[in-house]
Length: 169
Image 1 (tube, rainbow, N blue to C red):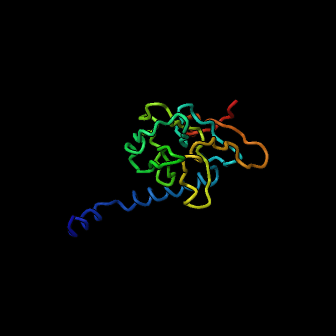
Image 2 (image 1 turned 90 degrees about the vertical axis):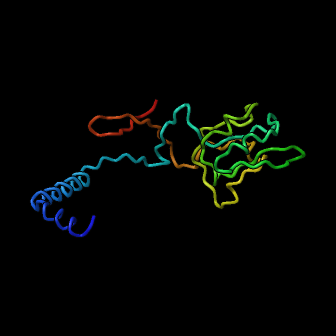
Image 3 (image 1 turned 180 degrees about the horizontal axis):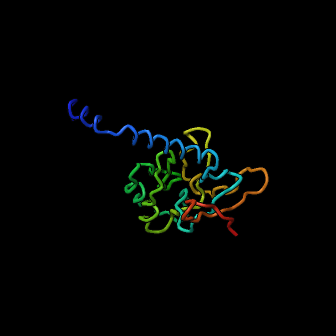
């Protein structure tokens, strides 16, 4: 738009309508400040139960792997690389690049790669994000060092509030 059209657009605005919209926005903000609708969990004290088809970190079963390289070829993020490990061609993964698409799991002809339900691993450095075949072959530690017990919840949709968390038995 050129400057003339912008000025004409501004002249057509009703200042009372604009003021009313601002008051409504401030009122909505105050309403949420007084009685907030939180959808955030206090992780790790409260943890959400994950669905059965959840795609977490990937695990290699190197005794099953045949070294076909299909996982490395299909990886869109170039996170999977083939390496020679103990005389056998095996994949390694860089979780800093992985987008958890699951293509490598789907393309594996012998099911040597499987998705786990672990999603909350923490690392100290970028080097720790690269899993060589030995580290890639190990089970992930699914317990977190949390004080007390972790309360499990699941999300339900409430028409008035939105997302609500209820205890998961």
